[in-house]
Length: 450
Image (cartoon, rainbow, N blue to C red; front, side, top):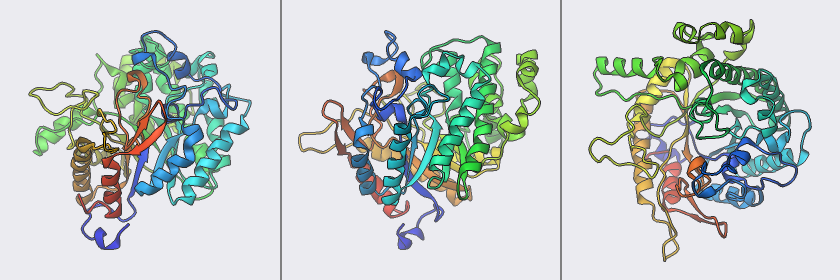
């Protein structure tokens, strides 16, 4: 951080500037060095599920090119890097047999990051459930809470002497809604209400137990949280009544579409119970699924509230030609002002923006550069709003741009490009975009240049 620039910056001095990726989206090497299958490996073989019939089998080949990628991160000036572990690379069967080659890969990556003065933030689960566990019931099998805890314990014991920042689950509500209700993500299921609640509860229980395992295995003061994606409805104005109305709607329990509700995915972690609305809607399945010690384990204290923000999902459609990204997501930077304020008030925790970014149509131009000026504008607008929240005293610990490099965007395949670094998937050549240089200056000035 530039000390002279910090005086002009609203961001706290210990605020971390980072970027993020996920294992299945960048690693490739899907069938190498003892890695087991994930549910995404299998889902990508189903006709019509992925744009272009693509998969993450090769992706950005990060498994082989990690040293080059870390060097690029250092050149951009990243202070922190959030990445996920591939559960089936470490435990090919999801439980039991350990794959030493998988753990050794993450050993090398963590060491390289630390040597480059980049602090790692490790996500345990970013959607790539071991297929072997799916065949044993997956998140519907209560035993998965124990399997996940064992996995967390193995990882913490191996990496916890160097890694202190952890994220248990990435967007658990999307694993539920997109993968187990709408069926458009792996594993492609559409569960009945009773089964859906079991899935929710088992994911919550896995999270809580993993928090305890990570804290026990980390040698140093651990910072542990989860990456939530619960919607924060944008108020119509700054009038107290509009703020109250938006907050009430954001944290409501809509019985017609409960899949994403904070009553399922957030509140139990902070209140230690499921709400009366959840109990009324799901009935006896709640008492059937929730055992005596579960709620205490689920609400194991966290150190931060992670949030992935792209847009206000309550306002998904354009009304008058507003800007949209290549994902057809509206550009609403004010969410990074309102969201952290509301989340902090709701949880009592400091907030970390674990994902925020723009999907665009980027290519390397004839002069060899990638002039992604819309991404720069998108980042500037959002970070100004985040700075406004910081200036008003909202405790913020970091910002992680999604994503560091272009990658496999799940069911959308490789067409949307989110990265600060362009990837030519045919040659695997990396080309930093103009936004990488812009972000370097943001980091150098600690946000004062915004």
